[in-house]
Amino acid sequence: MAAGVNFENLVIGQSASLGKTITEADILLFSAVSMDINPLHLNEEHAQQSIFKGRVAHGMLCGSLISALLGNSLPGPGTIYLTQSMRFRAPVRIGETVVATVEVASLDQVRKRATMKTMCHVGDKLVIEGEAVVIPPSEAMAEAAD
Amino acid sequence: MAAGVNFENLVIGQSASLGKTITEADILLFSAVSMDINPLHLNEEHAQQSIFKGRVAHGMLCGSLISALLGNSLPGPGTIYLTQSMRFRAPVRIGETVVATVEVASLDQVRKRATMKTMCHVGDKLVIEGEAVVIPPSEAMAEAAD
Amino acid sequence: MAAGVNFENLVIGQSASLGKTITEADILLFSAVSMDINPLHLNEEHAQQSIFKGRVAHGMLCGSLISALLGNSLPGPGTIYLTQSMRFRAPVRIGETVVATVEVASLDQVRKRATMKTMCHVGDKLVIEGEAVVIPPSEAMAEAAD
Amino acid sequence: MAAGVNFENLVIGQSASLGKTITEADILLFSAVSMDINPLHLNEEHAQQSIFKGRVAHGMLCGSLISALLGNSLPGPGTIYLTQSMRFRAPVRIGETVVATVEVASLDQVRKRATMKTMCHVGDKLVIEGEAVVIPPSEAMAEAAD
Image 1 (cartoon, rainbow over the protein chains, first blue to last red):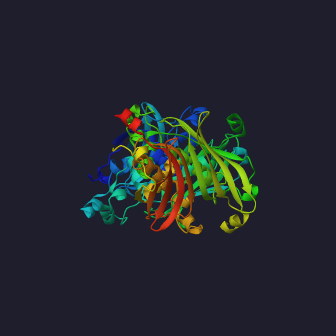
Image 2: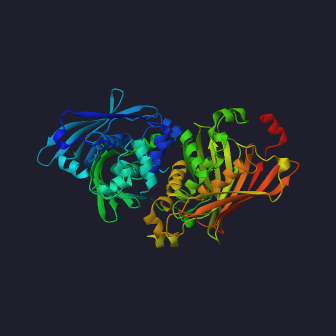
Image 3: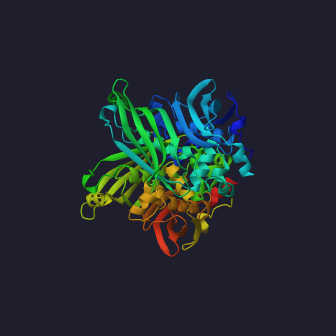
């Protein structure tokens, strides 16, 4: 796995994205892990009667792509995840492709922390928005890891 | 599935909890769903060399129990999930039992929204803390659902 | 998790239901767990040539919803599962929603056991019928669990 | 996959067995499929406080091995599963190996049905016992399938 981007090399506006098509299998596995067996996710007949008019993915299932991006791409390996906020704006359905994006919003030069804007889209529609604060890897840490 | 607790019946301080022992299988399935294949979660040899000294669970895996509680227990079925914030305070290891707790923190009588304090503990240690804003089911919605 | 319904509070005719849409992922996971790799469940070409004219779910996969209901809803947490009989009356296909129902059929006041009628339907069609005998939680047990 | 044993070739006392070591992954996947998230299966701390003194497998998870044997081994492919009864006699724990056995108990020459004695053991301990009635494949069916 490639090394992450060190704090010193991060630039405001820099971004990375990761897409995934949400399948019934994703929803089933996420239900197992989260213990969230709400019929909106697992029972099509029930979900048809709801305001969503069909099964929807767990919000945090989609949000988990953000976590993957931060830890694997930007800043990437070595990042320490401090906080995440999420606003769930629209449901995601089976078969839709969610694209998560993280973007460097601000850099705290004193504490060596980055604030990342975090978003999930389905096509042009923003389905989750929020913000993460992370400690990116530093040059010192990268050397220590060698 | 039992109906959720209507906004009108929520009381500040009311709480619910859900516990789960984190297994290797949880971590594998969460990696698959989230595309988070970071070696801190999946490679014991790599993780031994990290500051964590061993594999740790994905923060959002533990956080997903909060989502399950809000949707299934308190307020429960019919709840609409608006926002979630999480501060990751300590790692969770394989074999540890995470107990998620949600507690009614404030009630917005005008907008019919509840702010929930959300926490995850391993034993006495607070590992995640945060806050969620939800729209609980209302009496009108409950009647419509019958 | 909410406490179960004590023996003393069970009423003949009381019932609970749980629905689930059967997906390809359910069939795959159930095959893995049960070691039942019959082509009727996993090989569409083979299943098309069979009397079922397509893949069908494992009977016990659908039956397992009954077990979930008894342990989680009625009587619920604390219940001890003694026996289960099932008659498989019709196949269940991928994409169909199975609704399991358990109903208190008789109460043995001496031995503190409940006989539950257990059914699974797809729409109006009865696909599995049977009976379970359980030891519901009792007041004494509930107090001991506090 | 080998063809099943035709009704005409079944002999009373004939048997087949299938063993499986029950893992945390089995329990997690079975929870997802069955929607049975009872803490006796998923929460070690809770289960330690119960009469079981630790997490146990879902009874039907173990029972599902019987279904696999009937459909895949004896009588095997082509069998139609009519009924199953199960008596749960003892819990099964993570790491234990369950051996399921099915044995021809009686043959109804008029209706061409077989009654099978069905058992699950952990070592010498009988954990599930019961009975299944099946329609084995017949020579006519085997020819039709060619």
